Image (cartoon, rainbow over all chains, first blue to last red; front, side, top):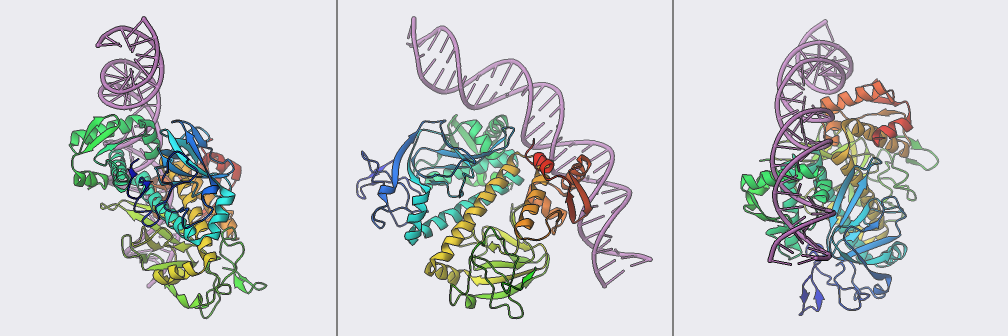
Length: 249
Length: 249
DNA sequence: CGAACATTTGACGCGACTCAATAAGCGTGG
DNA sequence: CCACGCTTATTGAGTCGCGTCAAATGTTCG
């Protein structure tokens, strides 16, 4: 996460989502962490006192599906995975959240999804009750949240197309494009795409098994559209070709 | 759609979503149609003039994926299907909308999904620009829309679990439970579940083919958890057993 | 009644899953 | 620096659920 000296803040929130309101979290004492464009302590007096800074180690459970939805989190660094599960243990990851994203948009009374730290994570935690009260008192926050939730919904629809209709290879190609796209928007390294999550997490997100994910990577590499730099980094040789593969053309 | 003499309105909006604000559409001259709890002409003066009443025949295209998102629709009767498609024609239906639902929640500049009339449809149409302006001026509308969008997002996550991890039989069982649930909430016939859509529309929604949908119905019937009353009506013999099948237990 | 369309059923093939073995990463300690 | 053990990733062989293609049956409506 890069510190912008000119703006005196860290810059890893997504620019598309947070075009106007650069922010930081006053409860993170040592450093000023970008929390989310939706939440601006300057425009919104008293906001900073609502949150506390929390950390999670990779693999740690942040909240469980079906548990009371007491908290809203704003990711400041690291990656969080949201997931739903069936009684027999089959699991579907519904999304990965990066710095600038909010955890809990789809929850009301109980958590719609479980959340797990994919990497080490830092986040700002808000009591949902107070968060919602504050939101109702500050319409600009509510407007911003509505936009973010609508964007999430749109992304969920894309993922439904992926899960319902795409082949394994198309899914993995689409996933790489998603990651590259998000990285570019967050202004971090986008071409050798970094994969912060393990194969299992990717498989859970794409509705596949780890073996099929692995074979799909190999297949894409043999096609020549990507090169495996390492297990956790993929060079996209041709963006256009990868897009064609992802869309089944 | 039943007319409630006491409340002087039609009652097919979903009670869960529209708990407090019974409404009707002043532009529907002959009858007072419930449009959506979020949109109340009494609390919100001038609102009625924003919309016009439109009709679509079954099978008609309401709007196309990727086209400019000029309109927001509020369904007053019938069923609308939202879908996304790949260049080669593979199609995924992302949701079915019934009376009381809004079309266009996930769209911003262009339509995130295409929309098609599954049955004959009546709806109220709003110019998106004016709708959003009005929304910004009336926070209660925005609050309601945020809730509706969050609910949609939660439903989308459930569907991702279905598409990514459930077997064909589990998907069809889940689908029947969804329909029964919505019918109950809309206070219309819920046990012999009515299927207003064709097998192809069901298949597109569940990420299957029509043949597999058909075989799954037959399979569930042979299991004894449902009975096919007709092509468009299914009796649920045991709700609990059907739930067990849907969850893979 | 009959044509057009929708649904069901059957036979078969393929893509992704399962199970199993091998290889690659990675931290630890000698 | 390398040896060792543990975790994670890749590759291979075989199976199975769902897709494909084809035919039969049911439904709708002029």
